[in-house]
Image (cartoon, rainbow, N blue to C red; front, side):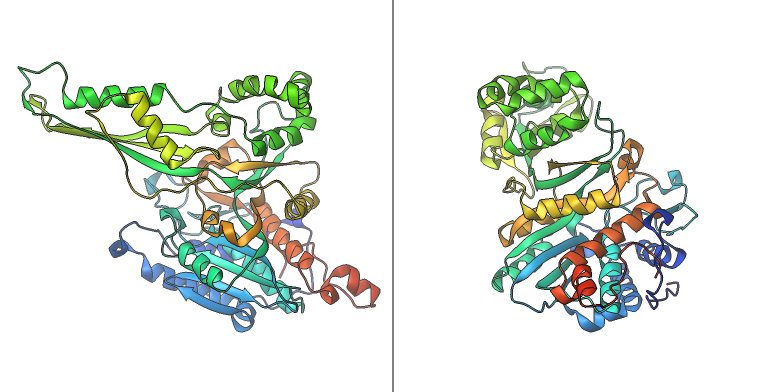
Length: 488
């Protein structure tokens, strides 16, 4: 592993607009060179790569590892940063693992080379999610160097298997916190970002601070038939019967529905929409008119996959298999259909829906693999307003709104431990950037990485003990550290 110098100097801070300097970028790049690919099969675990990453983190952030309490759960890392008062203010989540890189030959730079150029830091995990792990540690190390302590205890929870549902990492860490009786004001995790040019008709960047996430279930449809020679088929084969069942499930999705969090999201975005859409959303201000407008709104949102996911439980047939030879009637066939479940629906409701629309007792309908119910979604409160304020301070002119994570994150394991969850990172991405997540040429700009670090610095200052906050330092004549840069 390349030698990466730890943070040693915080005397000067460049503006966020300069982007992350070479030393900061190299610390992230070194982490990206660790191929911490998560695997469903423990026998295929990249344990040596996780060990390399742990060694790097401990070398690059010595104050953090000297002053915070660290407990490991497998390769997951739970840090406790004791506050000067009782209670817990925040749990900051991120994950160390990454998905595999398909077809590395198509990448501009090898996916685990950790290349740094004048504009970008390249590699698998640059956005999802090592940049958040390193950004939090950069901010904590900076705070410790400047004598900043949290008012109440802060936890950092860095899972190692988020991409395979977190059973060995997040589940165990959340259980540990539950046993300790932890209850935090804020949980901050991945999920929402600031999108630019992605929301149709919106004339400025949109910061989506997600307040919850959809549930997850995979349903197996299976058929068993007698089989035989293809020259004498019956009225239907196992493959034909299964294909009919898959088509029925796909053609008859679960109903559209406008949930309170999405109604809130639309209301907050209204100021940035063109006149006709703004007028339509204005109808939701009245309870009576809202009931009339909601069906039209959901039908409009259902026109694009990205917005349809916000107003229905989605249906995605993903795997189908059956038969062994062109002239042999198959004895069995099966398909997998993945559902992302809207709050208000449930795993049981998905199963019941599949059985109802298939309407064929010859098709077995059952769950396959891990499942999770939709998360609790609370209305935005003080924690949301804090995150929105920090985001606006870093990227002026944005629209801040709420939302719902369509995928699954480690946050779902901590839901009962927090008052408010916010899935958000203040990085500005366009449609092409979004495709790089879990795709080819994942990268993060130096500017976005600087924003991410600065966001965490400012959050820590807002969570700091009163004597360490900038306004208190000014009133006592003490010089407060300036939270506006990425130079170390």
